[in-house]
Structure formats: C-alpha cells, structure tokens
Length: 247
Image (cartoon, rainbow, N blue to C red; front, side):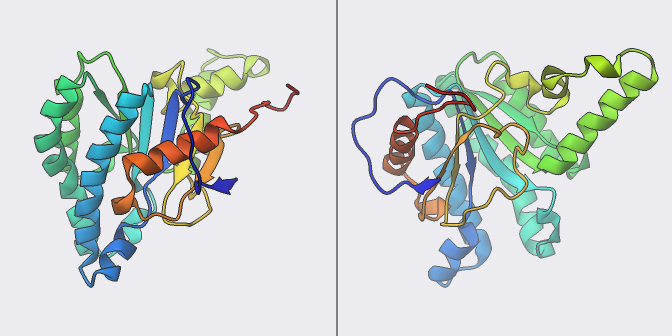
C-alpha cells in the first residue's frame, strides 16, 4: 500500500473495476473557510470529471462510495444536503452519461433513503439503462458489514427452505448474494483508491477487495484530477498481482 506520488507512461493494463472512497470534501471546504456542504457540492463536480476520465481510460466499472450506512450520524443539515445531491447531480449529468454510453447503477439500502432521493436514483438508472459502456456504480446508503449480513441472511433462508445444501456453499454463492453481483464479471475491484491521506477501508466492499490493489493519495476529493487518477493507475500497473500464488 503506497501513495500515488509518481507517474509514468500508462500501459494497456487498465484496471477493469476501480473503486474510490471519495474522502476530504469537508476538509476541503474548511480550508477555504466554507461550510462543509460547499465541499460536497464541489465533490460532485469532481465525480463528473473522474467519471469521464475513467471512461476514457477504458475502465469497465467505476464504483464511488457516496454515502455510508454510518453517515447518518452526521449533522442533520449536512445529511439533508447529501440526500438532495443525487437529484441535482443526475439532472445535469445524465445527458452527458448517455452521450458517453455510461450506465448508472446504485447499490446499497436505497429503500431506506428519502422518497425524492429514491426517485432521482430510479430515473437515472432508467434513463441510462440502454447504455452498454462503463458502469458508474454508486454505493449509496451502503456498508460492507451490513451487505455481508444481508447476504448471509439470504443464504440462510435458502438453506431453511431446503433450496440450498450448506455443504455446497462456495465463494460463488456469497458473490451472487452480494450487492455487486450484477456487476459480474467485474464484481471485485482491481484497484481501490482513497483520497485525503487517510489509510483505512471504512467498511467499504469488505468481501470484494480481498485481492484489490490499494492506493492512497493525499489529495482531497474535490482536488482529485484526471492526472491524479492516472498516477493511481500507474501505481497499480507497477504491482505484481499474485492472488496468493506465485508469478
């Protein structure tokens, strides 16, 4: 695990699935003596830029950690602003996504979000449903532990109904019970990036990142750029991915 502090010429080994923990919006705003919500607003502009950058690189899936199951603990005014962001974001960005052939997917406990947030999500998914290029996958009201608990409950229900033999539960059984199952064959990120200098996973894709390459960058999310994304991909390309074996 190293910081994205250098870059070079990228080769053809582009990670097929990049996941990003978009951290640092609040600190970006505070450094400028602005309210935290200003950082979240600027962060949405960064989402637009990085989506297009990832698409141009040939990435198949871009997963962005937008709101966690723990983020409800934040001040109510900030949470309310965050819940309204998807509507504002998709209203302005969906036409560009359609032009770029990018399909929107959202994973998480969407049914527990406010009605207006759910509506924005449903419409963005429907409007881009015919797109066949990169998947822009938002983790919204998502938590890795909660996802695993839900998957275990669903598997246990199948066992209780005699629809599944416990002895036949495999990694694939779990994969298919997780919220990323619809992203197959790109369910697991090749590269996980976290911005803002923090070096922790924060309950994100705990099962799926078993063999992901991790890159941490000091840049705050609103400052994250196309050049910084390429630095992270360059770091990924310098790694020797052995998946527990030898190469």
